[in-house]
Image 1 (cartoon, helix red, strand yellow):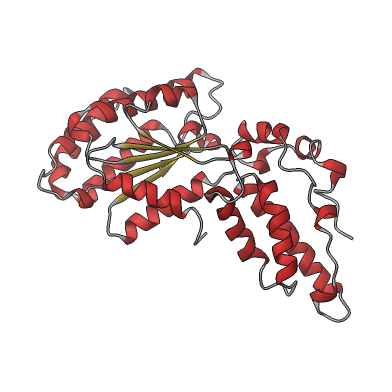
Image 2 (cartoon, one colour):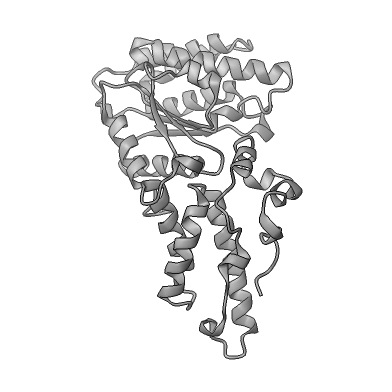
Length: 322
């Protein structure tokens, strides 16, 4: 949403322009903090600036189709569209390639062609690769095929940081905190951008302010009055604990209540409607137990309702306000 994540976006744009720093920028945070939305915003902003952006996203529900091989083929395809001088190298690399060797594919489609790219191209004209949900590669990785694909991805990405001629091409990735990714991209090889949540979020910091901006935009214009909106923000923002998915869910929930109240009001004026937030929304901040569950899943909607409701006091999450 416009007006949110300004500090993080500025930090990332500064890192992209920095030719002397790492070529990999790792945005990491718990599920629900808005990493995918941030990746989309970065891509849009760069494209608006005239940069070539290659966006890609992994999805654990499509792990047999959205693979490491698919990633590097998409990158190669976009490179061929933008840089005619690379087409011959790419065509030669693709021709007759039926091997499942990802390392060889990476060398043929990425390493070798990019080494031939005109060195006179200005840094701000070089492509930027944005890979969202890196940790979802290979699905849940219960089987050897998924684990193999994930390891192949990390291995090729490690080579991306090590090959000298690739270091001028910026790569942005998003994921949950993950030990294997940390091993692949330590501080010495990548720039880490952390999106705080839970106990790491403090009143007045950028994470809280972003949630407040989002909720204020959603709650304004409902004829509830400035005093009610401000009271609602003071109550809701700390309870979001930096989790945008929580804020979105609550905003949708309240919007539905306000709409129903307006329809049922005889006067047709919501100013006559009394809404007690404490009876609508859990009175405690996002609990550590719920945060732990969310951290193990990509999206809140994937959780079984019973698992979510178990941690919400008095089932107020699903009980309409009176």
